[in-house]
Each structure stands twice: as structure tokens, then as C-alpha cells.
Length: 312
Ligand SMILES: [Zn+2]
Image 1: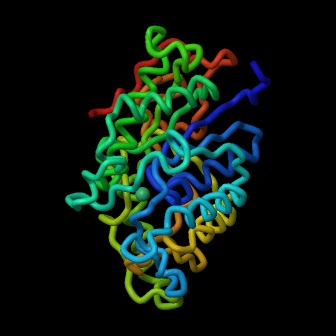
Image 2: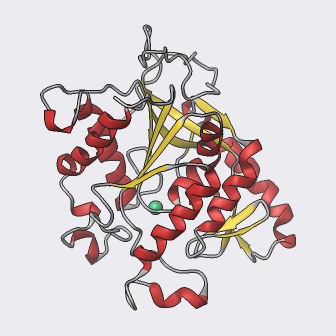
């Protein structure tokens, strides 16, 4: 086996831009510390809207060229974060963006939402068995905010974590590997509310005319469900630069950003997680400050894994 960095973090996301919005600071921090950071993106985000008028021709209902364009945006974002290992699930373009819930294109052949979960998970098993991450990060069962591709990314990631450890599953995909810890992206409600109160005071100095609300932030949950917080304040600039690289999707201005709806949101450079598998390092009521906490050199989560088998 080739020599690997000691700490290995795998993140599974639905579309290009989700990784930078959710985990940009975390990824930049761990990459800077020498960890191997691997991002798997499940679709090219072909159905997205486009913010800059000069690129409006790329959308699915016009040239249908947004997916190819977003490959470049993602590559630029990864460079800003120092992440060298980035892949698309099953290869580039294997699964297509499904669009928002209830749309007819959800059910098109090739749409990620229409994919068989086990079949899609097998592609991720191959990555897990190669990279052998101790830590996996993905969305909660609602995908953070109910988008079909985000829900499906959650299902595929959780299924793949199970299957990768299963010796009887697809020996052709590599040696079995147990991911020691699994986290879901989260945001504690009190923190988000506080940040939006702050945002209301600075909105007038920004180019944005209106603010989003707490409900627009994915993964918001009761504070006590949040078990880890990663202080990425040293990497806030890298996160903002990565978000800015997704220019068709995100407008960044100082500490604020907006998606295609134009509504201002705060950029979080402290990022939050809920540990749902592997309890080593987690002490009830005290948030972890390192996703690798409690993991020994052999990559096991150690004994006493009692923390938070999160509600599904
Ligand atoms: Zn997304």
C-alpha cells in the first residue's frame, strides 16, 4: 500500500459549492495540518441557477453547460482550500443533479435522486477502501434542508460506510475498512440566530439588499445535538476565496454571502458537527474541537464508544 498521511478525512457532498459552504474552513485547516482531505461530490450541479448575467447562457434550460463549468469552479475552490484529492462519485458526470424536490427531472434516468442507493454506495466504497479515512462527514437524513440530492448523498454515504466494512461485500473493491467516526454537518440554533442578529446590523454596508433567515441555513439544530466545533477562523479567508470560486452559485462580500436568491447570509468560519458513529473523544456536554479526537494510530475509535448514536 502507498504511504498515506496519518489522518484522513472524507467528505461527501451533493453539488460543487456545498463543500466550501459547509466545510471550507475545516478542510483548509486539516489540509494545512497535513491530513489527507478527500472530497467526493455526487453530481456536477447541472440544474443550478446562475448568478452572473454573463454566464446565464450555461443553465440547463439554455446551453445545458453548467455542469462542465462547475467542474472548473470546484477545482479552483479546492486549490484555495489546499485540497488535492477531489473526485466525482462514480466518475465525472456519472450522476446528474436532480433539481429541487418535486421537479420532473428528479426521476430522469441518471438523476442522482433516481439512483439505486446500493449501486451508488459501491462507488463510494471503492474510495473508502482506497483512502481508508478515519472520519467521514456528510449531511443529516434531511440533507440539511431537504434537497433530494443532499438527502441521497446522506443515504449513499451512510450506506457506503456500512458496506466498506463488510468483508463479504465486493472484495474486488478493496480490503474492508471501518470508518471510525461519522459526522453530520450541523449548525447550533443559538449561534445561527446570534449571527443573523449581527448580520441585520451590517447589512446596510453590504451590496445585499435583504437578509436570509435562520431557516435558510442547512443543518440548523438544537445546540445540545452539536457535538463538535472546528475553529477555522485562521482559514476564514481561504473559505471565502473557495466560496468565491463558485462564482455561478455564490456572491461573496466581506463576511457575507448570497446564493442565487440574493439573500445575505453570514459566512461561518467556525463549523459545527454532530457525531453519529464512534464515540471516542466525545464527552457528554463538551464539544470536541478535533474531528480526529480519540482516534488511535491504528485508526480505531477506541473503547467506550457511547456518545451519540444520532436519531435517524
Ligand atoms: Zn447542494
